[in-house]
Amino acid sequence: MNPNRAFGVGCFHFGYRKAVPYRFSASDYVSDVKKALSSLSSLSELDVSFFEELCEPFEVTEETPTLSEDGDYFPGVMGLAITFTLFIPFRVQSELFPNESVEMQTTTETFRVSVRDSFHGPSCFVECVGATDKCSPSNSVRLLRVYLEREFEKLATPVSFEYLGPSPFHADFFLRPGEASLHQSFVLEETKRRGYNDLVFKYTQNRSSDEALDDLLDELSDELGLFYEIQRRAVHLMHAGDSLTAHWQALQSIVTPSLGLFDVRSRMRIHREAQALVSDAYTLQAQYAVEEQQVQRDVSSTYEKGVATYLEKYVCDRSEKLPMYPVESIIKWGEHVVGTSLKSAEIAAVVLSAIGGGIVGSLLTSLMSRGG
Image 1 (cartoon, helix red, strand yellow):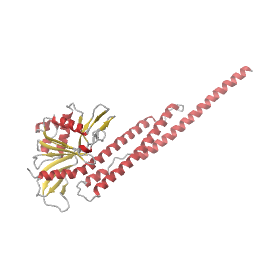
Image 2 (cartoon, rainbow, N blue to C red; image 1 turned 90 degrees about the horizontal axis):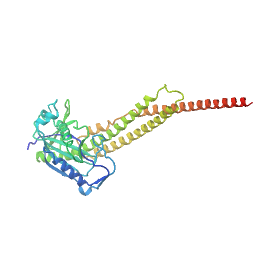
Image 3 (tube, rainbow, N blue to C red; image 1 turned 45 degrees about the horizontal axis):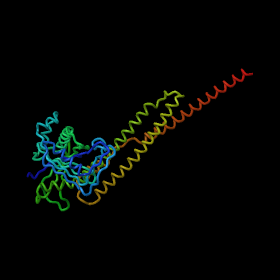
Image 4 (cartoon, helix red, strand yellow; image 1 turned 90 degrees about the vertical axis):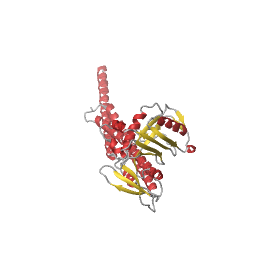
């Protein structure tokens, strides 16, 4: 076995959906995942394991989230580990990326895939088996993502293939023999590149590359699980922020000075919409504070233990870039519209009342004068 190994990192998950309501166990899910993956003629050496004794049955009464669309994933199975080998000929690689020379980047037709669910969530490793030194393993994650997405669309199964970006993770990973370290199982050397940096992990030569690779994936899975958990939280905030922005734009389009003074119905509609906008903005503001606090707590608990870690720079960088929106400005604008729309509606109501009262008074005066 070649002592030098190359792999890319991403976030893959196999979802599970049936017509609601339904009930299933982790064993049911694992059985269907095995069945779906085994139906792929290009797949071999499939192995799936999980902590069956720690898994409670799932009760599903409404549609479950998807990793690709919502950032959430379902189901979460304790200790889930899925490994398999895929053979994707260079011809197929060229078909999937007709405008790119992906096969020149992967330099192999054989890929060993490991999907692991850690405490913080799933991550995936794709090894380029027997690749050359010119291999760019992050491209193998892109290849597998597109290939599995295409193949699962052909299957009639409750299992779906899902992924969360960035997939690939923005780095190329390599494992090579090297000198020992007294404090860590691996010595990390990072080389900056114009595209993705190279992360080279050196391991002692008193163990095989298979053992070293398995140990390395175990160590990286916790940090990568945290990285992608932060990304899922960022997706939640992004969806909420985009929704708030769309709400503001829709309201802005109807808040115009051309409204007639006596168009009370439209002014009250604007008032209600502005109140809802302000409420949504305060909700997003609170959500951001909660998510930010939870992210910082998770990062601190991971990196203050004094154990060996390797991806702290990437995790912390992701944690510091949660999506932000001009919530304060939207709140001020919304509160201004709430006040002015209500005041305009009140003025219109008073004027209409006065006009109405004047008309009634005139009629009474006319009738009384005729009676006289």
